[in-house]
Image 1 (cartoon, one colour):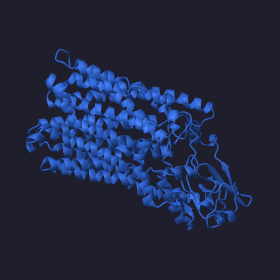
Image 2 (cartoon, rainbow, N blue to C red):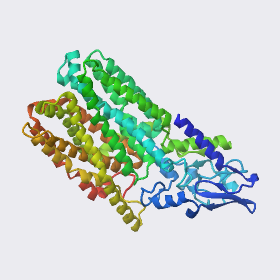
Image 3 (spheres, helix red, strand yellow):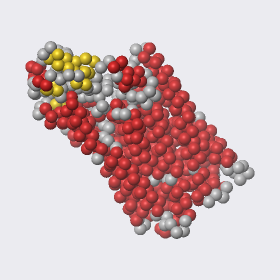
Length: 612
């Protein structure tokens, strides 16, 4: 719905940008210029900051809001968008438009009709300046359509702040729903075992294969979102997720339940891995500190809150245990409604293609082409490149390799930790199932407290931006995104040792609950940093880069979810958590090493968006 309305809005905006010279226009305003008819021709003047409060604020704060801080000089170019749309090797140009085009908001950038003036398109830079002649325009094979400078309202980065905030919340709710399903199912294992007459380990497999499905599905869904757009993937994925979750609830045996859970996870992988790309579409680099924090907070609420209603459902004899699946379907349906009604398309190459299509419609000139349409590579070849790109990233990108190991270990710890709550609070402190689910909210409290580090990280980031500007660089290196990880990394091994050796009958249950709060702080800080760092380092291919990491961390978590009970039964609570703590202690230097040596490591990268 929103995508259709957005398509229409682009048409209406372009209608205002096309000026017929015979009408003698006076003060025609576009995003960056004011046009008027003087001395027998169309003249233009730049919009000065003092004439427009919004423009002055954008100059100071980097396009967007007062919280943003110094600007990153975010110019748009054809090469940028041609490289962004999903080709692994390079951006192919038609030889007739080389050298690299530049943005030309000229007085008379003409299409096929000499009586019309249009702003916000690109033509070859060689020999073209303000006041370009009609003849030169006619000689071009096509005209490349791009954003009209920094402040083009078609660009999602320039949408109103609260509009982008609302869209971010919707994307976060999609992820919350998918991750909700990773833990609520496990709360009814005992009831499912009684119905299907299986062992505990076998009944844990549906939860494990759901996580594995998310990991594998991300390899397919995230790159596709970089080719056909975000909404074209979000909406079908949510619908199929609901169908397979329904199949899970109606399953007659554990085999059917396992198959449907895997397919539900496969389809539900899209928002988990593509959300980072959506946030990059909407927010400037400095604003992503807030955006990724909001996304991570809401996404983590899913697996941490879900066991509470799941446990109470399992306790009630009048409610069938299959209601954990029906609640998930209801939640997914509500989110799907929000997506269909309110979530617009944010993927820039697709928006520019819509803009070019509308320009052809308005002007009758078929030479207007978006960067996505200029390229000669066929659609299915681009799609094939996008599908194997996550594997290329994992095999060739040192940053991806390091973060894959780090976050896989962290996810193993997270889901082993969640499994251990039954052993700790039900086995040691004699909590009932509902109380065990409530105890898990301690981690959720820690996630919320982790947001207190966001202003501190932003303070350091602003200093780094000013330092980069002083050195003549338009933006700092991506390593400035690692502050949150450096703040929170020590909290995880400390909390593991703390809970492992204080979870005993002689010590109050409040003590291990305190450890869970500290654990939540550490997990939140690391995930906010990892999302933002990878998104900054691989900006144009953020979804594919994160898909590489997500595949291994979800697969590892799924396997560990199945065998976690074996560890607790045979090794014991103290030593299980101690082993996990030692693993995270060994990996503790990762964010610090990347902070100091990241520029060198990125120097070996082929796909990093920013290289020092």
